Picture 1: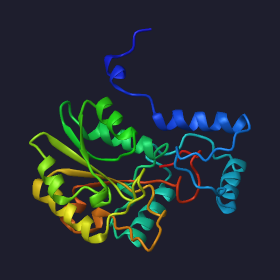
Picture 2: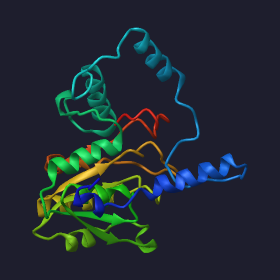
Picture 3: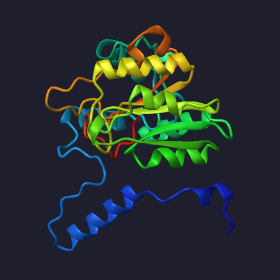
Amino acid sequence: MKLAARVGQVRPSLTLAISAKAKALKESGIDVCSFSAGEPDFDTPDHIKAAAKLALDQGKTRYGAAAGEPRLREAIAQKLREENGLCYDAENILVTNGGKHSLFNLMLALIETGDEVIIPAPYWLSYPEMVKLAGGSPVIVPTDATTSYKITPERLRSSITPKTKLFVLNSPSNPTGMVYTPTEIKALAEVVVERDILVVSDEIYEKILYDGAEHLSIGAVNPEIFERTIISSGFAKAFSMTGWRLG
């Protein structure tokens, strides 16, 4: 079978490969601490499981609305307004099969062939592969310990070219765990607005905060950045629903 040429540009997921290796070692009796997939160590809360069971018992197994159940989209919009200061309506919400699916949909919907996408490193390994599948060019911007592995406004500005379409922001970060401060988020937002690009804000880890860190969604900074921001989030990390595939 001959695959499309674009498939050859994509690297297999190293995260999944390491997860599979760690699982195999555990099953062979070896005590392993896996630092691969981001997964909480508690079970999905009982009230969520009970609601899912009730839905099954009520026969809610047929095709639903393509963008997600209306009540769910309304609840997500309410959450974003109350917790994140983001004034989205239900019609602005799209429910997907997990956060990765939502990000891939975004890349396909926004990127034209040759568009550049800025990705600060270290990064979640799937970002560049999604960009390549969408026909874009990932622009990796290295960071280091001197900035706590954060991209600075200056580095972001200098990385933008006439071909730049998107900036991928991930805070709290996978894999470093760092969180941009509100001041840092506002400074990055200023650059995005100034250079008139779009930002994809991956906020799947927004509830995983330590040492008094504060999460600020970049879209809440001002109306100008709100119009240039697409939020990707989900239930997996906050509610330990990684296998439920809801984003």
